[in-house]
Amino acid sequence: MFTGIIETLGKLVKLEKEGSNIHFTVESPISDQLKVDQSVAHNGVCLTVVQVGNGWHTVTAIDETLKRTNLGQLEFGNEVNLERCMLANGRFDGHIVQGHVDQLGEVLSIQAQDGSHVISFKHTEGDNFTVDKGSITVNGVSLTAFDTSNSGFSVAIIPYTFEHTTFKNLKVGDKVNLEFDIVGKYVARMLAKQKP
Image (cartoon, helix red, strand yellow):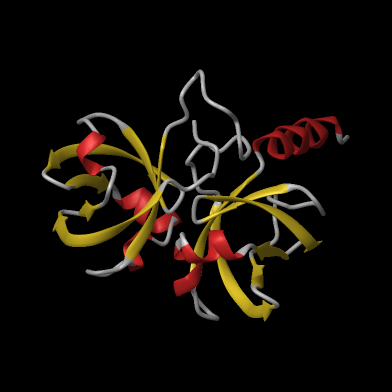
């Protein structure tokens, strides 16, 4: 389990295709602290560390993960948001994040507003939804949604988050990983079962 509070950025230094899988090798300040078989969120996707070296680690994304997320669009040199799983005795600064991406979203607009940024996203309509002042995870970052609809929402990004995550690299039209609030998903499922 994660909280959506990004620890650091990693840089992709090697992408190796094996069958339908891709092995991503990432250089980061936390790589030396990782161990094989540990779960780490990469752009909000929970992946297992399969190899660790001096200042780098490797994770593998299978075909299903590549189809459901933006990981398959990553290229050499791209940055990724990194978060290790939450410590049981740690503070819960974000919200409950599983590292299981529900769907891709698309950046509709990016507006600078006196130091902060407002970014709007669209997504396909369906079982996933946001509510004003509710939680949403975008590329692994825990955020508060507003201007919500059945097919989109906006978020406000403070300067620190903008500079210390991949948000600074986003452009209109980019695809992002969306994980909707787990509590909302459970409530929606229960209510759907009550319908005649």
